[in-house]
Length: 393
Length: 96
Image (cartoon, rainbow over all chains, first blue to last red; front, side, top):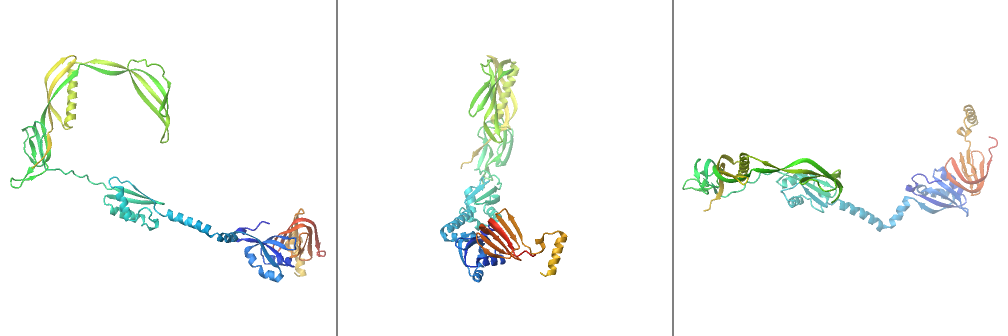
């Protein structure tokens, strides 16, 4: 018969009974509801059977009653293996030491990550964290609570508006949200505002300093517009002058504009070439032969394949070769002149800032030669004329 | 068990067509081929060896002869015998 359920946990033994009245012993055992199995008569008139370990300890009085002797032949189950294991102290202590070491090492902090900082250096955050008790090889159970940590770190680092501390196992992540700080004003030394070019002042607004000139005054290049020296003659003070000064400035332009303009025009004829792309290489599939056009433009369209976000190293390339004709357009002297003036106006704005306004334009000289219109134009432009000049004592 | 109760039990068993061992302390033997013998309602082992075995019953005795007889399990009421059984004899139950 098989051993009963959980016999391996409780332990069981195989015993050999020596004595005259072994049958009586069997009867008494079964009467006391002790479980025995596989009873066999051995050659030398002894009886062997299996029994549970707890029952074995209750066997002694029955043996006395029946005058039998017992000999344990074999032991099975956990209680005996535990006993076996106890002999191997070093092995078992190694096992426990390993578990202990594993636990200890996993309850240390190994890495600290700082995320989200731009102005504050990571070292500063780490130094503050160290003072709060977050540093490598710190015990996790010695750390304060994460929410108090984040509050105290936030107090320690004044330029942060929020700090979050999270711990995942042996890793601590410090999320930093920096507070937005107003931009620092650049400190300026005491200075005048002087004229950049010769001009006629149209508008002068002094925000700091003293306006020296009035509107409709003619100024030379380098003359002071807004003085940085304020106060009475007894108590003078130098300040950085600030303000807006606009004036009329004359710009002379020499423009040459061709009477024939050449333009590329697509005729509508096109052929296509297809390629299969494999990594850096491409293999032509269609559209072989010479290009039948004298002048052409090529546009390339790459259809790359991708799997989700990962782009795969093969694709399909379509080259469109479109025929182009150069069309020479003849325009009138007037149109060429207008085109030239337009270019010049763009140039003025590009050079003198977006607030430059062309007030008047005078064509001083105009002639057409060699298929070009040559112009000499005087632009009267209202623009900012102030430039800073430091006051040197 | 008095004579009256035994008669009453026998009568009810007869009336409801129940097996005898359900009501009276009659042993039940279950034998599977000549390999296994299951005895219920025994009253202890009298003799046990690998060739010969005697079991006490309520009245009389059961005698088993065979080779390599082994008690696979023994409980207060039941015995489970295994081995190649040659002969089974019942003594002392003739008049019940």
